[in-house]
Image 1 (cartoon, helix red, strand yellow):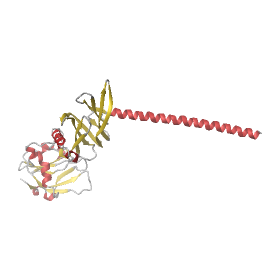
Image 2: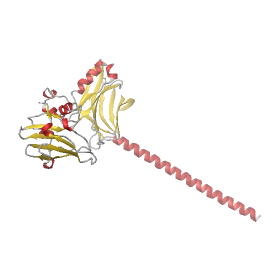
Image 3: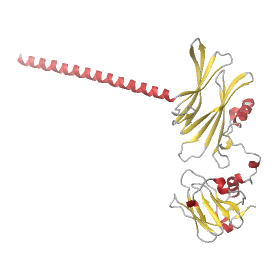
Image 4: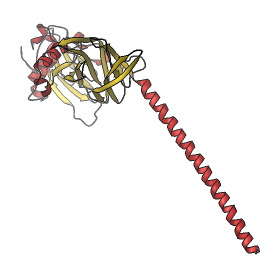
Length: 339
């Protein structure tokens, strides 16, 4: 009998402990679930806080509102997107008294690992074949990962159905292009099937401050502002320092290429040479009083060069950021000039 009582006592104690543990586990699970929900809610709120409406306008009948929203906007400028994935979305709403009823949305643009700028001043609403369209411009800039290529996206959006087309442009920021991008438009097969939309997009794009449009002078390859392009053209098939080609210019290429310090200057009786940081090497013939590019190169990292004279006319060029690369030697008297 005593044994039975002991067994019952142990059973009830075990049951109480088990029930208590289950209750603790349930409370713990509820707490974790609540924390997860709160964390998700905070993340969702943060994500919404990083988004902003960059454009908002009504249709012709004033019955609908179209909003273009940007994700991952910066704190100081909603037209500057700084996320690892940047998205532009067009949404359409029906006006109903004091409320807006959501109708549909379309993702217009996605960019991974590029800074994104939207030009708030270069926009246009235009009627094409009895349909209203909204046009705007987007710039994708490198995040500093060694890539120097820029992309421009010119988007035309049909306001009534949110169908859209994109004209893309790629290039680099060059010396001659100043603040615009020196490049070309990329072929788009979809645009080829709609010639009128293509025409409107090209007209709109060519008015953008981001597209490099050369003046009549700049269309001449021999113009001094084209010295980089001319050098590449002349030395395209053989980058052998012993047979480099170059061109003489009366214009001050030192001044045009940019500011420099005294420690970037190497000179002797006949020549003055300026080495720009991770950029070009420009020479000046003191006797002829003419400027000429010696070596044209531009990079984000790894191509900074140091120059020294090893004879009256020979210079040694070494890459200070790449210790294993063998220095090049150029005899300034043996450069083949095209003029």
